[in-house]
Amino acid sequence: MRTALLDDGAVAAVVGTRVHPHARPEGGALPAIVYELGADAAVPTLAGSSDLYEANMLLVCLAETRAAAASLAELVRAALDAISGTYASHAILFVRITSSSVAYEAPSDGSDSGTYSTLITASIHHRH
Image (cartoon, rainbow, N blue to C red):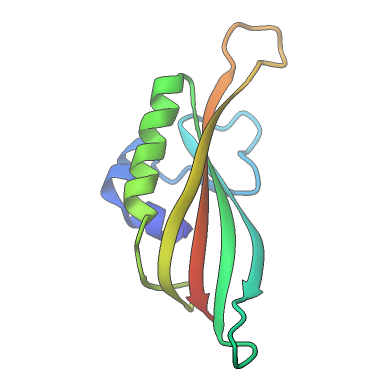
């Protein structure tokens, strides 16, 4: 999904290449996107297992203000919701945004500026 985000002009205009797996680099610039792939399981059918899989992905849109994090999240939603195609040799059948929420991380250095985030959960249906 990183490729899909970087290929989207609106997302890339805001974050450049700051789309990171697992964590943002220490002191990394904002805005940025951090993503984590969760469970990836075969979708059961009446005939047994299939080659259809469903993976869950958490995307965290980070920014210096709540409005900027929300705006980035809308760009991510527009870039990913209902896409299909081949990414990293996986045939993506469709992506569905299932939820979103907001959060704030207080600064650890005693300053006044923390990090705002909008968390997006996506369900990715694909074939291996």
